[in-house]
Length: 366
Ligand SMILES: Cc1ncc(COP(=O)(O)O)c(C=O)c1O
Image 1 (cartoon, rainbow, N blue to C red):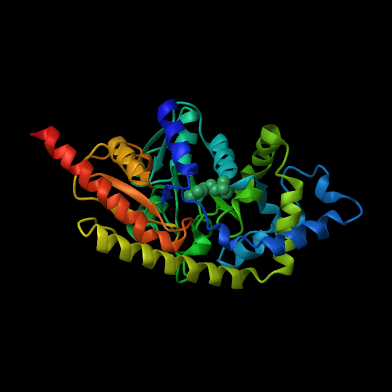
Image 2: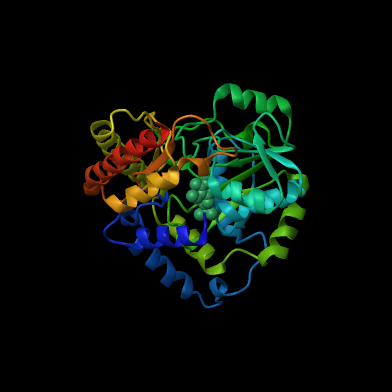
């Protein structure tokens, strides 16, 4: 994105005139503010001040144990010692990448993948390639962002057969609408899976608490990398999350979130079917967005500009692939952040922008 274009997008996103259907942010309505506030007061009241003190690079023991318990419930054979607390999933992906790959090497990614992981790989001088290639690979087993589907069973089997190291990003694993997920690759191939998780989607991203589990032989080195990068994850945030998990019914919260986001997905799907019947999408199995195949190829930038003029924003599809796709324009529409009462209006604005963009594209082709 050019600097001026980025400025325009940022300004538009901040404008109350624009209905923001991009970004992939969780709903602020669901942040457990009161419970987190109680946790903050409780941990700050502890006399040794541990929540405000430096801690070990691998993270607080109590939180590591809570994360391990949840992974064990999903079939992984881990202990608290296997878990490293990170500043969100992004930090965990970054450490795994530092462990596994050097500049110039390639990493296999899914046909649609998470843009900030692509940015990270490229920033590290790595070449994102298709999943069948690469010295290591990066996948979202439970739920792909943006596609909203689990990793295909055949792809999963061939990955396991290939035997390369796997960075398994499970950022949305707790947010499949039916609460079911495919078994973790961490359980199937613990000797070469670098498992990444986060509380960003299920609690709130502002605390920046995630985790990384690496094969035991690499744990020491992973902790050394964490320490070299930034010493440790934020002590206060770790203490708050740990306290919250001990006092709240987290599993019940997940049930509420799944119902909440499923309802929003249905409302967004209905708005798109009504206003843009030529657009195609598969109803997602969970997560925050619809992944859309349109019926024409137009300039993404032009379509974004027209959408902003009409008062709506979305995520351009090209950001979600390692190599630019041919064929019709694709985009990600998020139902997680905007108020559901704005969905119809927002999609109608997109429909007007789409009509203008496709008219202009046809005009240019003639
Ligand atoms: C698939 C995926 N992985 C990782 C992240 C980063 O999460 P965190 O906020 O925990 O760094 C995101 C955030 O959108 C994501 O969608």
